[in-house]
Each structure stands twice: as structure tokens, then as C-alpha cells.
Length: 260
Image 1 (cartoon, rainbow, N blue to C red):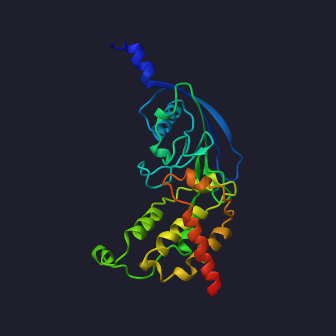
Image 2 (image 1 turned 180 degrees about the vertical axis):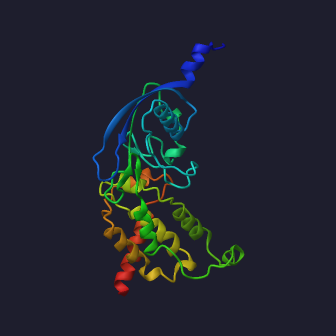
Image 3 (image 1 turned 135 degrees about the vertical axis):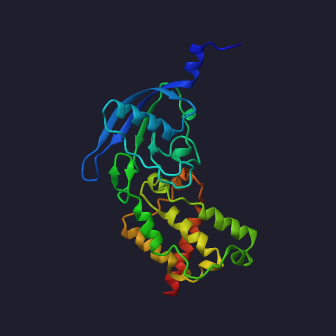
């Protein structure tokens, strides 16, 4: 049975009610602003929908909504935001840029907010400063040995189980969803992923003794909370980083404390 043109537009064009957090900067108080958006294509990504909103705002002489993005391929982790109370939205194991409007229905109301964490101050609207993660990595998430070229690194014998576990930890993209999901705004899952993938490999042993301590101390200095043990970080992580890495971080931290 063929659909007429009216049926086609009803199927592929949506009307969305948006409630978006607008804030000039960290020193000014923000608030929610409501927008009504028509003719949203069902095949749009979530960021393409925001692009469409901003184009409409600019055409009307209004200020566009500031939001961060880069690769739009789920790699950089910069586009993360709360969507209807969940980091990155209603779909598991995706970043915001991977979320599509097919996850919503015509007439839905969508609430969009920036990360809510003291260590991630708002820069503007939905953009937050996540440079605290960079400072944690600088505190100890590196190796000083020459790992050599790819053939040289590949000549080091590592079991398949260990290499896969290290690779799983290295998949962390530093988006901050774990911090946003935790009631204590803890960065333990992020820190443990960075510690774990180096602790598992021989190239990472030079700094192994104090890596965990240095990164945990920097995390606490930057105002991140302690682990809440609720597991919300693993659930909301777009890469599914396991809580087992936090257990390894605790072991590495304890080993350094005992040696000290």
C-alpha cells in the first residue's frame, strides 16, 4: 500500500520541545530556556538537530546555543551532555554525537544540560571545561621508556587476555560521563582506565610504583569526589569501561603505599 505525501511527512518530520540550559559563563547564573522546533528529520543525529536549532536561532536574530564537538564519530568525547537526566541520552554505550533522533518520538520534550560537577566548570551553555582530566594524565599517565616502532613493540610477548584487557581500558575517551553519572562526581573510572592499561603492559612498569598515587592525589586536588560504589559510572560509560579497573587502581595504590 503506497503512502501519500502527507503520511510521508508525518513519518519523517518531527516536532520537538527543547528545554536547554543557557549560561553566559561560570561566573553568571544560568537557567533553562524553552524552544519549539519543527521539521526535525528523524534521520538526524542529535548534534545535527542542535545545528538545525542554531541555524533557526541565527535566522531569527537570536544567539545560538554553545555546545562542544569535534570528530562526531564517538572518538573525541568532547560533545557529552545530559539528555533527559542521563549522560549522553537514553541509549546505552553511545556518545552524544552517536545518538540519533530515532531514539525520540514526535512531540517529545527533551531536557539538555551540561555536566554537573565542580571540577567541570561551565564555559558557556552546554560547554564545560574538562581540562582537569588533562592535568590528571600529566600527573602520571605516561611512560618514559622508548617503546620503539610498531614492529619492535609487537615483538614483546604479551598474553592475549592481558593485551585485550589493556586495550579495553585504553578505549576510554575521557568524555567525563563517569563523573557526571556519579553522585560524588568521582573520576575513579577514568583514572583507573588510564592506570590500568599501563599497569598491565611491560612498557608501563617504569612509573608503575607511583603512577596510581600521583594520579589519585591530583584527582583529589582538583575536587573530584571519592568512589560511590554504585556502579553508575560503568553503566553510563559510552565505552563500557569495567569497574574491575577501579579494583586494579586500588591495588596499585595500596602497593605503592606499602612500599613507601
